[in-house]
Image (cartoon, rainbow, N blue to C red; front, side, top):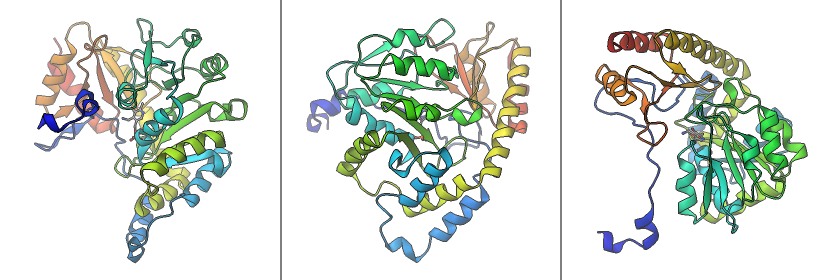
Length: 352
Ligand code: PMP
């Protein structure tokens, strides 16, 4: 078949998402999904939307959802973009903002979709070294570049950059677009949304997949200056004006309005994270301090690859990355207390 592919297609190395196993039921701690169900109000709204109106196209400009997001974050509707998960929005950001001649910058250890998009859109990139503990140094982003993208907290390392660090990166890069990918911000970090009035070059990207338990609905959002949002709209409308379907629009809106449920599930996840971090350290793990819904760990006495396999054979799935620098680490999603107890018991059994 390969003779039918173009040179571009043949050269792509697509992103491979974490396993969604079908062979048996696992305790699934490998793709940073939320262990709690979505807000009951969101589920109700989705059921209501699943009616006769599905014969109609959805609102191509997603006004109601964008207005709700704008009200929640203290911006205007013109500063809000929504897409099919933040992956799609990041995918639009590359051709919209990073198509210049200079290479863009992102940390050497980060979300592996960034280099995939860069190759897809022919965007040159340079990776900026993190230190031995994967910390990002904002000063190293003060070099000539065509744009910056940082995940905060970073994935898979969980490293969090304080807001003044983000500000430092923005100050050094006023002429380029700086994308801050805040997929995990709701689990304890401080959002860069508060910096938007001072930085028209800042695009903050968030998702409803993690803190709102809606990974299956595929809804992400971006907040930024109306000019940046217009840039994203031009790319979007060149592909598919109807990005979000009626079910996604209804579910996302209801979820964003249910603040009490959001706060309660976030509290549960963050408390479980703190307990799990302590217990893993007691078992001898080095655990990077995390403000996300996952922890990034390594054990001096047992290789990550072996730990991954031993856990999998016991029905527990975590994430192992066979990549330079992080090939002796595991990324473990925070599940329910019961799931984490099962994980810890399995580890007690496996570890020497
Ligand atoms: N950014 C980061 C850093 C992530 O880890 C993820 C989840 N894989 C995403 C973005 C994408 O999330 P989604 O497309 O579900 O919004």
